[in-house]
Length: 505
Ligand code: ADP
Ligand code: MG
Ligand code: ZN
Image 1: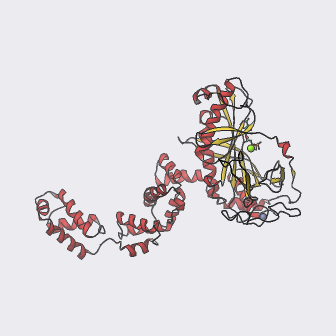
Image 2 (image 1 turned 90 degrees about the vertical axis):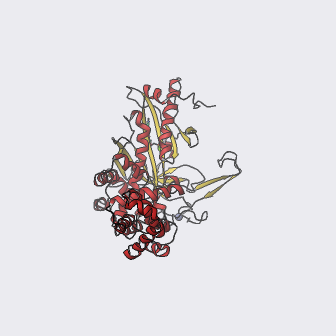
Image 3 (image 1 turned 120 degrees about the vertical axis):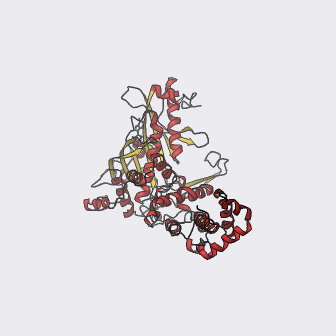
């Protein structure tokens, strides 16, 4: 076994009693552009392997790249939203290394001239405290292709008989966002890491530059972590846990590394600078490769691309298009809706802020918009294991259902059936109402007839009510609701029964 083998892990509390964690988070975001970063190939996924390629993204001799304007625009928007300075002039650089998923033998990236630098992102922790994470840089680069290792048991390269390569992803634009060393978070470091990635994801989605779905690899995080003894200025040696792809895993990876570093250091060992793999099953990390130094990549400015020199007018025009930042929006909505920090967190975790706001914009009141998305629809999404945005119902549909309830044409129970119909693909709310015959019976004549029938069919109960036992009215209301297949307004039914029996309500 190597020197990186972990002795017994140290408990989290003991680790923090001796050391301060220092973290650095590198997040890659795949942009939602229609075409790749340096050629016109489509970025659409799930196509047959190697059908979305051309001489440029395959690195054939003589092919020349051209910069995707929307890629640059997205990078500037991200930079501005992160309060960064935007370079007046910057270049792409070649990062040279060989790996079969990268046909050019270099990745077109940015090195010492990133498009955006020196910013920050405020993130809110579970208890409401705001922690500022400083941003070092955000730069543009391109994704690699995808290798599939065949023949082994685990899908890993070890034990595989051969590998398949798909270059459809090669050249899809990526923005890499790198934090400055995060210090001072103490025992909350893993929580800060998770909150940062969560807030960054909200920001990216709000900017509309990517859907930032971590489970689909559209956003992934490398967690750098080191420990230093309390009171020591100098940073310790870091490990870099690569490609962590869920919020929970980011937190777990940071936590595990704190415990592992403390164990190694406590036993008199040294941490070597290396990359590590995170394992979802038990939350551990294992050694990857010893970290390259920048000089191993032989970076040099890309000679085939012109420098990027965004005019200040363009930058300011883009700044003017920025939406309200998600944290500010959540604080504003909390006030407007009068909900607790805890409830707002649940709404955020459910991914319901966007749908609720859109439903309100489509005419619904805030209370019913929240009620539907956080109730019926959240339950449905949960059951199917999808997020709210993937349900086959639109905010306009929900607003329409809410309007029908307000107008008294649907009661709550019927409204739930309408939602159910829309989710089952039976059409718009109005179509479902028609097809399923769902409408509150508001025709007083029909209601009165149903009430008469219920009284005639239950003489004993009717006598009780006449005798003053008004609470017994529930049984008759139930009978009328049954007769009208739930399509009556229960409160009105109760009034009519009491009226017919000549009893005060
Ligand atoms: P590399 O490309 O080698 O990973 P970067 O500078 O792009 O290097 O990213 C390193 C990340 O780790 C940055 O977020 C940086 O702030 C952070 N970092 C640097 N030194 C340390 C350290 N000693 N401990 C923890 N994090 C560190
Ligand atoms: Mg790195
Ligand atoms: Zn191409």
